Length: 429
Figure 1 (tube, rainbow, N blue to C red):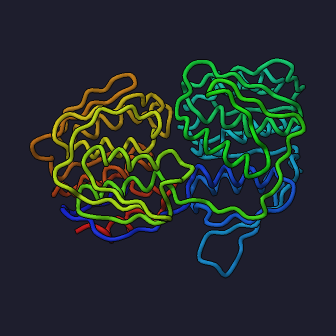
Figure 2 (cartoon, rainbow, N blue to C red):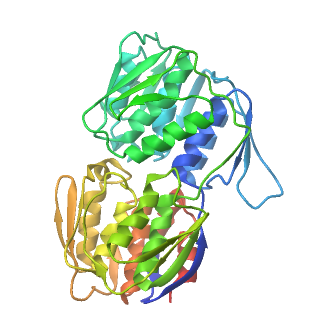
Figure 3 (cartoon, helix red, strand yellow):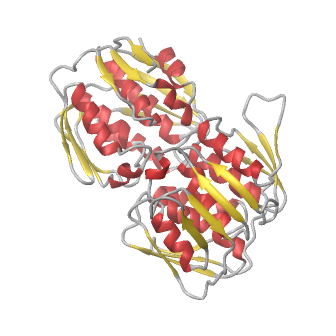
């Protein structure tokens, strides 16, 4: 197994320009493909997850052209006005949930025959709640291995939207996102009712915001009821810019709070991504934070303070708070993070296991994690990353505690941030 050895460090100084948001990139690619008209997408994330979406869309008959002569990863997408040209396709989507879930829903209403699969971990990530919701609308989906999990076979639907579609909201917000994005393809009024508490609400905000930019305005009643008007149609905005990834920003904002001062370029206080509120969380821990029109800076201001926080609004960035807890005075508790269990790995279990390797005392609950830092961090810990990009990026921050650390399988960061460790090394000393 490939390993990366990070030397002991104590300072983090400088600036970083973020890659594009994964959540925004894959949603935008799909909406641009489904829209009437052509779209220039600027600042698209270049990563494994976006590559899986690009490959799938091209197999489905979408023309996507790279725009030469510019530094950013810009694409020109030829929209197909709601109907994929290829009605038979076998799609491999790796471990890209932001590709697998929305494509499942859109293809369910695309009058074709499709096979969707991924890596073994994707086949362990639940999709039953989305399939159940789509089936209520007349979709025709079949599990090819284990009930409730990919791979899937999709056949033409017999669409019926006469009754509200009920969908669970307490497992993954990606299910509701997928349903919302797909229903405008039916051209009929559609009602959605969320059963239970909706987790990760900011990710639904991203979805609704982007749908509106493409001309479909969803009406919602709180977070329980959503209405897609009849005759909705995606219309290209002609050009759209992908914000920097707020979840990726968390590692560098944390580094500034722990080690001195870091400026993160490509995101601002008014980002459409919920994870931008990570900056508020580190302020609660005692860091100094400054906001600018297109960047955020964080600075160390003494020893960090422990917090007790409901993290429903920042589920991905909350992982970084678990590492910051190692540098805090007291026990930090992160609550309402059950969604961690159905991500690239069971992040609650993985985080607890790896935090203990560096000396922390950890209590793992069904939907919470309590972390008490050690008096001194354990040097030379070897961190398993579970093929999870965020585990690798999070644990790089441990080195700022003055201890060397080894990261197993560092290339798992290719999922969202292929050059993460190169950028991290530029800032720390």
